Length: 378
Image 1: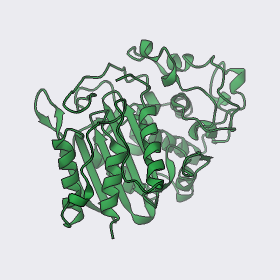
Image 2: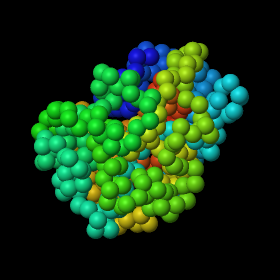
Image 3: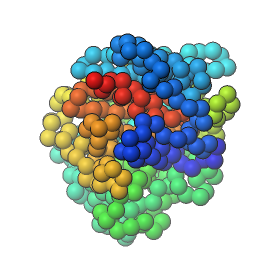
Image 4: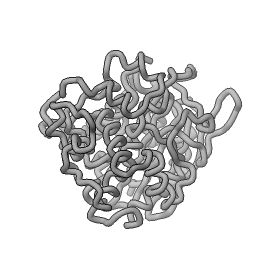
């Protein structure tokens, strides 16, 4: 597979899925570059049993056809309908996926970075409307008008380093936040800050740097103390190229390939975390409370500041906001070498779908759509 970027492929698949859903289609066509060519199991063949059994049948068929391997958790009204692993976490050693298996999250990391920034604002240590140059030494002149809000909402104009033509030449090398920022610091902006929306991992790397500057702690430690520990997310953390995680794969159909190596210091606050479906459910449930911060701050995170051109989908702080499967949702996916992930929270319906796959070519948005069709079936 030609390596496009760590996270943009998943975003593109998600947007295509949303566009086709608006045209009345429940699945998206496979492409050799991003998803399996194997057709999805039709829902019409499933017996009219309880939702958990029907969802399990969908996932089992995907597993048997080698179009899914990973773990899934589905919950409604605070009750877990299904929490189960499918396929192999490590094919060579025959280690099965389970709800406790750890996976790289990719861009799901961004919602935790956004939460950390808002916690610091709640503590009175920063304001999202402040210029980022307040916290960045030798700040480029072109960044003078960029605010923290612009970074959070992908409206800064700072180019995405994962889209640089030479990205493959440096992705395997260890990098400090300062060294990573230097890779894009002198690049021209793609547009005037606040004038457009364009997904930028570079912006969230800068947010991680700001978190460290303001808190006096490492990004990893701040999240551990202020998010993971309070929510008892004991299987979530910063990935130091950890061997205890599931093995990531690429390839389609029966061809399983090992992806190119990426040093996890590079994705940092844009994509450096790992977790399990069970821990992400603790995160989901915590967001219904004020355990981490007041409701007014949570509302700020889920406000769609930047409108996209497709289906009215918006972007808040670390979350996409808009209609999915004809229900209001906040969601985000992630893609990083060997892994593809998604969390969907249908807040009004109290429905959560979490999918973590250790095969990057899995069509996770399509599977999430199929699960949602079962949950919302009347």
